[in-house]
Length: 261
Ligand SMILES: Nc1ncnc2c1ncn2[C@@H]1O[C@H](COP(=O)(O)OP(=O)(O)OP(=O)(O)O)[C@@H](O)[C@H]1O
Ligand SMILES: [Mg+2]
Image (cartoon, rainbow, N blue to C red; front, side, top):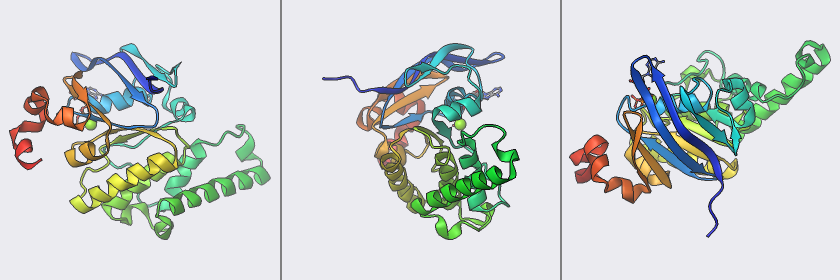
């Protein structure tokens, strides 16, 4: 059988903050076109992994490969241009700006025009129109067109999370990192979110890696899951393997989980 193509790979990645080893010699491969999950207790190092991939932090040692290319140490705007986008654990929208303007920020990031383009008035208008139209089309595709002109901060929580994903998609990524997309959602919203994530994966031809504490979401949509504790991988596998792994139950899921799962 052919090996699946790897989209993103961490190779022995380590990140220290003073005496804390937030990520400790972590290696994994995310196969192209999949939705995969990173789970583990609070402070396990999950968000730090995202910060390493997206260039917000440089690994103390180890490597990050995207589509076979070494992107270790690239700054966030370069990582973004290479095709990796992310959302944040705490929503980071411009709350008084409209939904459309928020998505336009993402669309601007992907512009490949030369630096002098926006200072030539005619070209600046042209670029602004392209960015506007692209952002609007995206909002339409994601079912957010009716709130395009509403301030982002006025949207219901679930819609704000989707808007953040829309802004990330506006950068035209091939790989999407979602940090706790279901945080704060009620069961109805999180079940909608699962469909939403599966749909964008297919529609935008993405590979997705998500961090999530909502096990229904993780187990429901992730084909492969890594469990981290103290920055190290303690288990990996599909939902069934993770659910039944005694180490994972002890370190993270807890006995109560089994009663309600
Ligand atoms: N910039 C930083 N400076 C110092 N320590 C940090 C920094 N960022 C993260 N850490 C530490 O690294 C460890 C891992 O943090 P991280 O935010 O990656 O955990 P997490 O798995 O995302 O947790 P949660 O589920 O609560 O979001 C924690 O001990 C945290 O305090
Ligand atoms: Mg986190």
